[in-house]
Image 1 (tube, rainbow, N blue to C red):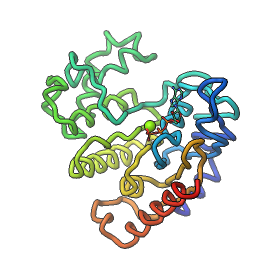
Image 2: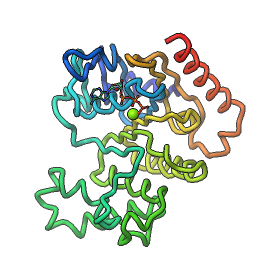
Image 3: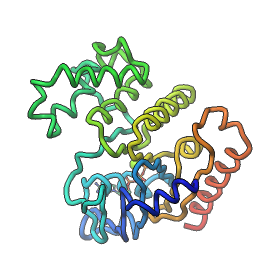
Length: 272
Ligand SMILES: Nc1ncnc2c1ncn2[C@@H]1O[C@H](COP(=O)(O)OP(=O)(O)OP(=O)(O)O)[C@@H](O)[C@H]1O
Ligand SMILES: [Mg+2]
């Protein structure tokens, strides 16, 4: 972590704060995640990596209040999480656009559903549509507003999903393997799209990924989780200077960081 970020951490309370969080899905189940304690500063970009089934998506459900913890406490934005948060936007591995809605109408969906936008949606639709179109333009989808999802490529659908996650200007963006289904070129293009959106708006990001290069390129901090029951095994501050360009992925320091992550995960597989 940079000196500036450390100072900011010390000065302000964490934006996301997990304290000794445990979760069993059903009363009789074993724990899916165990004793998770971590803090995320406002505006921090965090990546979570770990083997399949270790509880990464479970972490997301806990962070947004979709699942209450069995034990422990979770605060987001200075308040205890007791129900589903409105200040979060989410996007997932498979783009989940509704096929009968145009790109623009898909992006507008959260505003039709989430208060305080919902009650004024009809009246303010033009203003919201302008906001959605501006977002679509920043991800390179200008001119595709009126196309249906099946008229877009996978990468374009995923861009639209990210716009939909951001249209209500959430303070926190949760991304669960958002680029997993894309080819390597499109994936790296979207890393840059996300990097630029984050640099401009500075929402807090939690990115779950299997791709260690993706984690190191994008994140300020990477957490490594153990296999089930998921625990946080390691935390690594990524000290690559910003702004980061794809060129950085060809440097020795970048490769060293990725190797270090891979070794930690290797230890998880053998020892954990
Ligand atoms: N709704 C559920 N009910 C019961 N068990 C669940 C539920 N969702 C997940 N689990 C279990 O909790 C554990 C963690 O699941 P989770 O989906 O968080 O893993 P993950 O790290 O996201 O995996 P992947 O990388 O494959 O997406 C797994 O053992 C899974 O079977
Ligand atoms: Mg998952």
